[in-house]
View 1 (tube, rainbow, N blue to C red):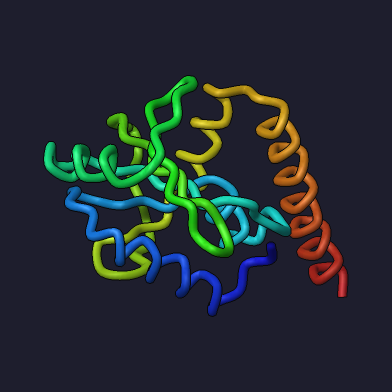
View 2 (cartoon, rainbow, N blue to C red; view 1 turned 180 degrees about the vertical axis):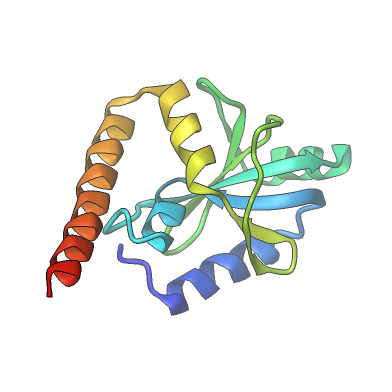
Length: 147
């Protein structure tokens, strides 16, 4: 799905309606890459919780589907997308843009570091897309400077 301002507003509304009690709620992954113009489409919404309360953690585990894997996460199935909520602490996560009250957008550096750590096939594909998008931006600047 392509990210628009309206869709980003819907995503933040969906997250707000979950009533998550955490120091920060950070949108990361493909939605953040789309917001930065480095990816065309997203398929799910990845969210990192910074210091969620114990009751928040328990409420999410009771009300939504827990998924295993490399990270503990809870999956909230919505009509248009799934919201994957990562419950582990991510000390290096330092969001930059507040999207809504308490909901932040991850920095590009944090996304790259997380993708490097995971090193999945889809992460490698995202790196190729980022390089291509950034190269295109640099190419445009060089053409503008020549004129």
